[in-house]
Amino acid sequence: MNGFVSRLEKVGEENQLGGGVEKIKQQHALGKLTLRERIDLLADDGSFCEWGGLVRELKPSRISGEETPGSACDGVIMGVCRIGGREVAVYGTDFTVIAGTIGNQGAWKIADFVSWAGKMQIPLIALFDSAGERYTLKRGDVGYDGFTQAIRNHSLNSGLIPQIALVLGPCTGLLAYAASLCNFLIMNKKTGFLSLGAELDHFRAGGADRHMEASGQCDIIANNDTDAIRTAKTLLTFMPQNCWEKTTQLPCEDPVDRIEEELLDIMPEDPRHTYDVHDVIDLIVDDGDFFELKADYALHLVIGFARLSGETVGIVANNPDELSGVLEPDSSDKYDRFMSFLDAFNIPLITMVDTSGFVPGDKWEQKGILRHGAKLLHTYTRLTIPKITLQLRRSYGGGNIVMGARGMGPDIIIAWPTAEYAPTGAETVLQAVFNKELAKAKEEGNYDEVHDALLTKLQNQFSVMTCAKFWTNLYTSHIVINPKTSRSALVRALEQLRNKKFELPKNKRAIKPA
Image (spheres, rainbow, N blue to C red):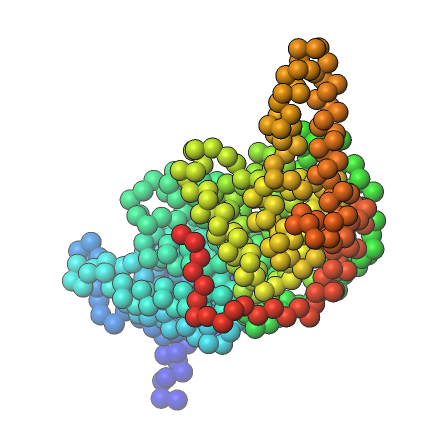
């Protein structure tokens, strides 16, 4: 066809090499896959349909005073593929092409493609490995305007389609904002770093560990590129295509009525002792498979995805093994964002409760613990998804209501017989209310006897076995179960809530507390 086909084939060959053989060798030497290798791992075999393969720099540019040739795809590879048979939009930056910097054409490619993914209502996965916006001596920051539009489109897609970011190399400047706007962030532990300023020590300020443990920005840390991509594919299975659909219920061979005797032994006899809530979760969910998020951030609150009888659920659980399962600003932010995602994409919420409440003290008041708690109340109240509370043990003070107390409108509250409802712990109430009796007992030499008798009386008063007798009591449960039947009780609750309809008051927008 007058040479056009041969020219097209030549461009295709150039694209496969990206920045060239030497650049590919350098990429591998850094322990990283090339972008095309990453996409090959991500996509079902032969399903990737590339967009914008002919794009090149429109004019030679000057970087550090040297001429640079036209770049393959202008450093951005994008297209649509199938992942597990589902259509997914994918784009990424190619570090072999001018260090993956975003030029003018590459920026507009991304902006247009992110918008298209939202219109088609399919999930979006972005792979970042880039030194940021491309700066030239003649034209300044050539990718700035286009990528600003891309950021806007990422924002407009919020809550419409699932968005997953993989930071597999440097991700700085405007790119860092794009990654942060995605719903979930997966980082390569060895090569990924995220920061606004490229001049920072990336392993100190922007590495995966720092963004997991300190900032809470990172959701999952991967050991390498292959691990990151495998994790992203698994994460995607817990999500629907868009906000108008529900997740697919998978076949489940794990018996729904499975009885777990081990659940009877997890709770310590002494309420002052702790246990790891992961042990409870693993014994209840399908095949013990719990996909945890932000595992090393605010350890006293556990969040993640699981399945019950094949249905995807989001789990939020206090962990008594860490800081007695208290709530504070970091755990509140972790909880709030996860709830918002679940509600946007029609995924039921299960809260597993054992908390002494919000941590008290002037230090925490100055850190805004009140407004963080208010955000949780605001978000939980406005959830339209099925909401199930599994009350394990303590449900004290403000922690009670943000974790799904009856007055907050959960659909079903299931309690173990060990559950307690109170404004604060029995020991605290004991010291405050019976201080005179305890002081007298101390003088008379029978302190332990009086202390234990009064404590037992309070614990019985706070127990669900007492509270549940009063249907109109704020602190109560709908169903009290034998802990070993927790799995079947939760599955049955989900079945009862499958056709839930709940409409919020008609207004333009709810305003979340500051």
